[in-house]
Image 1 (cartoon, helix red, strand yellow):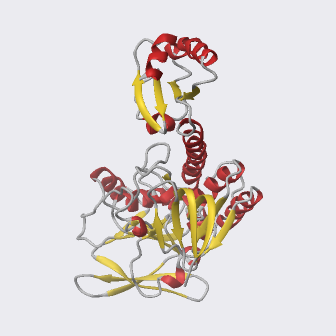
Image 2 (image 1 turned 180 degrees about the horizontal axis):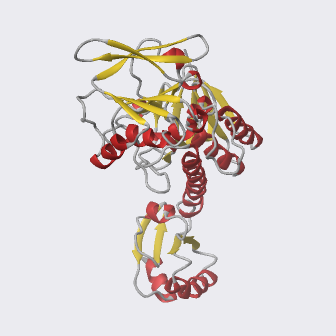
Image 3 (image 1 turned 135 degrees about the vertical axis):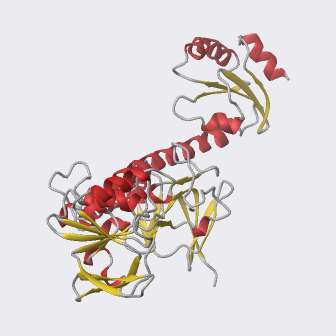
Length: 409
């Protein structure tokens, strides 16, 4: 079957908080933008009953409610949505492609915001009680809703124990299932000692989850199996928090984008991957804290960076590298006094050679994109371009005569 081909400026893979925010920024910049989401627009946040730590909502908001606002705002700026699964991507080159079962979307920029998923236990009935039915993966999100209740934590790593201690500020009792012998945990020693001294924390050693039990509406208890004796203990709880790891949705990008050992994408502070025009944002990225607020920050940066990349690409191709006349590019930094002092020299040259030389001023203060394309790492610098090729760069003392000699080369 021949796929239908559509053209976009930006394609965002993933419609969670990061992808939606990136879409808002791109749409507001009047870039033709598409968000592809395989499940529910809003991502994992939509499974959270109450989000009380997102700024601007002192009374809190449901995950679905908050994400609906994000979705509405993205649509306001003309962002388009496709609810489907991405089958393949081509990320190299100026024209990138994202393919679904029926369509091929070609674009200038791809933002990877595919998020992740918590690692599950694999126990019976687990899928039945996920998220808003009793199984949670975020103590920060759901702790307040468990005030005065009994909760269980599965796992003994740093995240499990630290989140468990946080839960004790709200819950009456926090029961921790640990698969190791008594006194052995996977967390650091400081967290371990603090947890074992916490009067609200109770540990069940040598256990794994055998089954999640309850009615059709909500979880009622967790059946723990002793790994040594095989004995099953049915423990009543109001909520079970699972902290046994997190899996980023990056399988599709393996071998293309740099990842760490856990499969998280590696970016710089501008959300840039090592592939020009490919950005990553949100929980899919190697980062310290995974929350809606940090996903929004990532998405804002990725969207802004995408806009800058497309604008710089247009300047580079249409103004700097095209045309019959030789070109001079002054690469400078607006906050550098030396660079500012040389501006009159560039303007004198531009006035003198307006008919025969094309002059471009590239300020790298906010973005080094054009400088990187020209291979410039030092400012101030003058670059001579002829017939779409960089001929020579000069970084020494600059005068009108120096620049004229550069053009004559």
